[in-house]
Length: 308
Length: 308
Image (cartoon, rainbow over all chains, first blue to last red; front, side, top):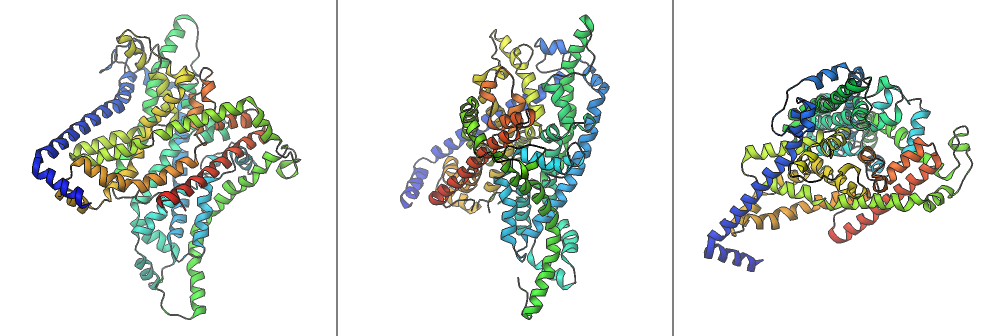
């Protein structure tokens, strides 16, 4: 230790320029790499945006690079005609709103209770939730359970059965433990405040950061999920947006009646154009949530999230 | 905790009353977990039974290890296990990328640029799996996609990224890195922000270069978090996510894209062989659980970092 320190001091006095130039190299490499990464990350997304406003044949012909070519709104207009997209949209908004409300209520209240050191049986109860992270009944037993409860093909199956998340509980518990001072409860108790009222009126208002962050996670999860819908829903009127997107983007089941000849050609081109606009229309709303929550990420909510 | 010196009976009564409100808070999560996580765990017995829907789980006749043997002897056994392992080991190899990203972000002095860089690297995380795979299909199309056009510019023949078994794993893993590396780096950035500034000051006094500070301060600081996350990852070695693989699957790449979870889904829900599917699933879960315990034990011995 002493030796390296002496060597470093020697190096500094001998050639201070040396260290500084190595820092400059590091700096150059750092920003060079960062800019390269920005391009790789942003360009595909930018391309989707300009392609959604471009004539489909220009896109296919490789004429769209930096600006839309043959500006058109036909993709978006075509989108308006697809009733099932709007049904999916409505369903997704309902699932996301209800699912997020339930998820927040269930996970935050459990997390708060587990964060209290005076909760009898705390260790065992924590283990009860954590165990589900590592062991599960598996697809078929869960499916049979849901069916036994008559939840198959219902609104409820999309928002209730899988709302508890051990991971979210751990994250929120850590937050409550580190940021809500225990004295506060002592004081509230003297004033005759019960646990429930204390949680609702004191703890929650002090915990906006965790409410925002968990709310974002849960909402993004509901907005983007398709697996549960694929398995548990049969009725197309209940389909969320992602399931309909899957038909449009991946399995290529277009609803528009395909005729023959020229009409079919036009339909086909519109369909390919619509893929770009549907990506934008389905992704932008959930991305807009992020800026509102961003400031809370800096409050160190994540620290200790995984440990313990 | 600092609950004065009241009589024993008074204290017990108060503890129960105190606990009551907390138990009410815990109750919803407790019940949901019981019904939708623990009840299905009991349902895994159908892996050892000849399950018939008419008889139910209890009354279906026992089948012993018949379905496990059937799986071990089937030609899909080697294939699905190999594919699952290859995909998860390959993704495991990308584990250091978010760490490198966090180190980069931590070095950025220009605050504006830093914030912009972080926002852009997080953004792809908000894209749903369905849209992500849809994007890949569109952009990687050899005939009409961005990639095809790029190759055409140079007069070269583009590879069929989505339809080639040899490329499937790489496409899967690197698209995941593209989408989630920024988001996954958040936790490391949070850990770095907790580093005591006096360490850097001391290092500066000793004449350390910026690279040396990264090497001897930042990286050791990240190790505990990295080890914890790595253990969790190994525990899920055979649990490669269903969603993206299933969406990316097509007849052309099936030889390298059929993994345990997609196979479980097809056998179970698409062809209704409930017991067989559950047996495969249980086999998967047990191996994951065993791996988790083994790795946790190793980590405990070698680095004093462990989950429990």
